[in-house]
Image 1 (cartoon, rainbow, N blue to C red):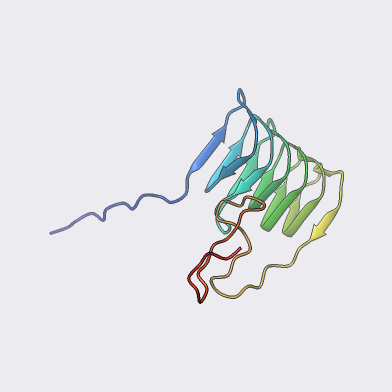
Image 2 (image 1 turned 45 degrees about the vertical axis):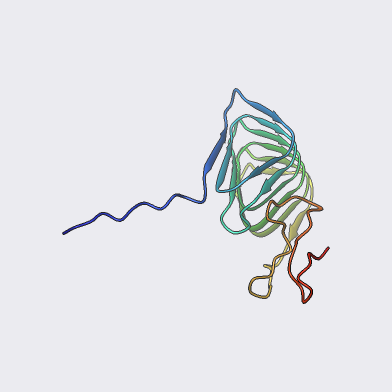
Length: 151
């Protein structure tokens, strides 16, 4: 009579870089990335709408971060590109530029670089300038009138 709805598998996940972990190289993620350890490389969100990076007070990133949402309370040596919202907490230290749409800064946070406001993207429905993996230089394929991939 009563049936439970089957749970759909989550398309987003949670990735943890623990405080005893160091990663060297670029990181591509979807969902949420929690950085308590060290990343030496760029961070790219694969999901251009829902992804979020959290850098804890013990976390360190040497490289650029490109994500819709970010919460920073640790050290970032590189530029941060946040298309939606960024929070800089009291122990945040940014050595680079911050490109933001909406920003919250708590007293004590530091930015050694420029704060650059970026208006929200106004795109046609279905259009995207970000590759599916967020990788720079990635090529989008689409079908034109000939049905061949475009470059």
